[in-house]
Length: 324
Length: 277
Ligand SMILES: Nc1ncnc2c1ncn2[C@@H]1O[C@H](COP(=O)(O)OP(=O)(O)OP(=O)(O)O)[C@@H](O)[C@H]1O
Ligand SMILES: [Mg+2]
Image (cartoon, rainbow over the protein chains, first blue to last red):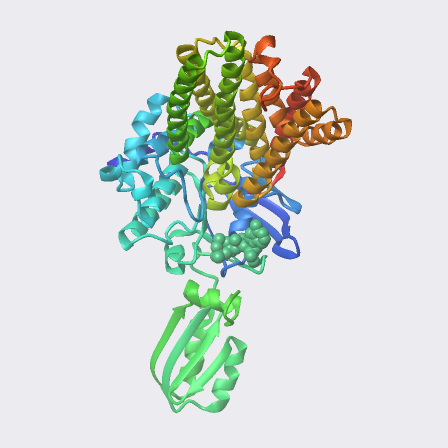
């Protein structure tokens, strides 16, 4: 762990924040209706403590609305939610919760360090700990040269960085990030990724809304897909097994009945000239499939299993329509 | 309570950064200068025409009321215009999201904001009243009676306007809010003056209309009471100026205004706590 993390996360290594198998977030049939528009239909979620949870879905799917309900900004029309064991919206529990809104805005006349001090004070931090944490966070997010700059002079990405800093100022146990990297340059994204990982190392739980699937893929432990206000799938990114595997085989002289026989193990079988592609749900069957194909007397030039990327999985779950 | 003070502090600073506060101060300063000059030349004229001292006193003290009235109008406008954006604007921009998810209750946020604006307006009313009072004293030698009571009533009027603005801000967008509150104050304005005219012309029907308007929004009634308090009974016998206060709103009306303010405040808190952000 680099030194700056250690300065920042005083309670970091060794002392886990929670019981290992507790839930940081549990919701049951959470629902939000705006007029006639159902923003969130039937949200039942469990997020384990210490997990980095990705919440994915197309524009207007209800991601931000869900976060707002969990934070008590928006009253659910129906259903319950427990956040760190307390009903959502409870004021005291917010001491342990950090939030980066979708589009972070604040009084433009505040300087970066004044803003962090204000948010720290709102979280109940003492002047002493603020004096330590404000410069450390500014340093962490690369804003030290801009610490005396007013927010009105900040660019979009700088605002997002300072927004992330205010979400972390009180060392929260649970952090909600609503599209934290949407306005960031590649360095900024890398930084956010590192920050999120460091949060996990100190035992915090992170709830992440994002459209940038390649990033989610490398940071998250667990993802849920939401479409039109409803969870349509979850996916564990830690386990190697599970998830669809696609295999591309380059072979000649493959008998048609052999290809037809693949249905025993495989789905979406397609053959074009010398290229055979099919999908399977378990990598356990791959040796058997390979033997089966070889036994047919075909000449096999390559046999390449590929795991479905999160993006492919997303598009598959959401359907190929335009979204919205 | 810590949350309330943090919010009050940041709101006070936010309010004083607005250009509108400086504009109001500038307008106030310019007004006081002009007012002092006008009073000065008028005093000279009165002396030149050998106006009897008691009439001179009556005329000058009622003109002094014009000065206080200008201060009153500027302060009420300042209270409305600085706070008109605070709730609706912060909801629209999302600024409120970062605040309302901190460990402070929504009522603390709202009360803190209110105190911040109230503090800023208090400074303004104090400055303007001190200015007008000084002009009266230095230029005409008239010491305004019960100026503190008058200032307090005017301040109460500002708080009433502020509370209504904050309350409507929990429902409406900035623009709608501004129209509603200024409209309400317009009703109050008309009501207050109708009551005066009714008293001068001895017209009970007109008086009823005036009272109903003042009940709808009692802000201007507070000014009339303040003006009544800030004139000696001798000055008030001059009946022909609009500031003579032929009929002063009763103490019951003041009590009504206080109750009105408190109900508006409670409604604002309730609705702000309930609504989606
Ligand atoms: N205050 C509101 N009033 C009415 N409808 C709303 C409101 N807020 C959100 N909605 C609707 O609810 C749905 C979900 O919105 P939400 O902001 O949660 O989507 P999202 O998943 O965060 O989208 P994005 O990826 O674009 O941020 C949308 O159809 C939106 O139009
Ligand atoms: Mg969103």
